[in-house]
Image 1: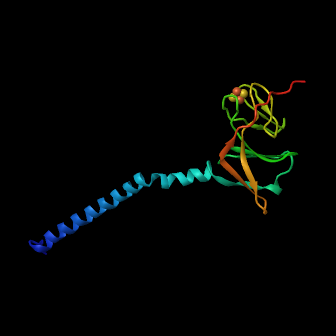
Image 2: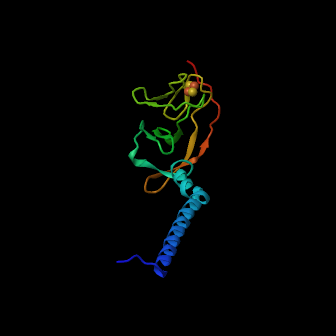
Image 3: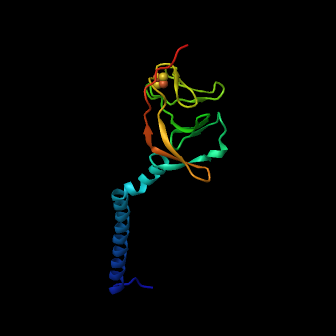
Length: 163
Ligand code: FES
């Protein structure tokens, strides 16, 4: 078959150009959305992980006295002591290292300068000038623990008591 020599070829070009321009328009719109709506795309993810009120991965009645659950999404420890449930922000109040829970010792022991905190976050040794910071929690009737990871509360200064 002979190649088209008139109208249809030109129309074909026009269609290809149209296709191409609409493709660019679509890509442009995607970039536009990403730029303009970037906050909308990423901020809620951040909010749900750190900075919002999020349910803890365990229910209140699943926690026994002495239990400590590490919650990486919100960067806190959920602890249960005789004083009840607490959500403790995991940064050392000395210079900000992450303080791991030492289950064997039953204490939070900072690897940086040896500050030690009990299960309620009370500073009991080392240079930490006050207890670990807390996050506000509420317990729903079904035991769901809601942690306000956006509200980190600094607690009052307390010097460790030396016997
Ligand atoms: Fe924890 Fe210094 S940062 S003791």
